[in-house]
Structure formats: structure tokens, C-alpha cells
Amino acid sequence: MEVHFTPEQEAQLSQIATKSGTDAERLVKDAALRLLQEDARFRAAVQKGIAQADRGEFVEEEEMDARLEQMLRS
Image (cartoon, rainbow, N blue to C red; front, side, top):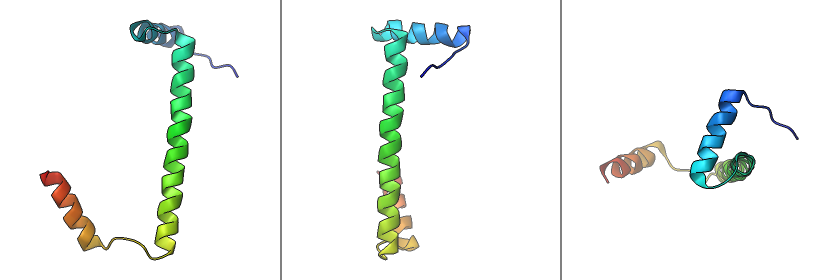
């Protein structure tokens, strides 16, 4: 697979890579792999939530409001 960047984008990536102690190719590859991992994690969490809702396992609105309010106070 090839990915093309503008010269300005390539310069930015090189700058970030240098500060990170790596090269631009490794930086982009690592970022793409993190994106794939995060996407898989997110999709699994959504599927888990859908399955729970299908089983009737969900939080009522009042309870969620209370939880959010407590989180904001913490």
C-alpha cells in the first residue's frame, strides 16, 4: 500500500518523527496500527452494548443522570 502526503505534511511528519526518535515511515505505520486497534476495540464495545441492550441489560435514564452528575462532581 502506498500513501501520499503533500510536501508540507511530509515535513510535519518528519519533524514529529525526529522529536519521537524514529523515522516518518515508522511513525505513520505505528499511527495506522493504533487506529486499527482502536477501531477494533470500539466496534467490540459497541457490539457488547448492543447485545446487552438486546438482553434488556441497560441503565434507566434517571440512574444514568445520577451517575453522570456524580462523575462531574468528582
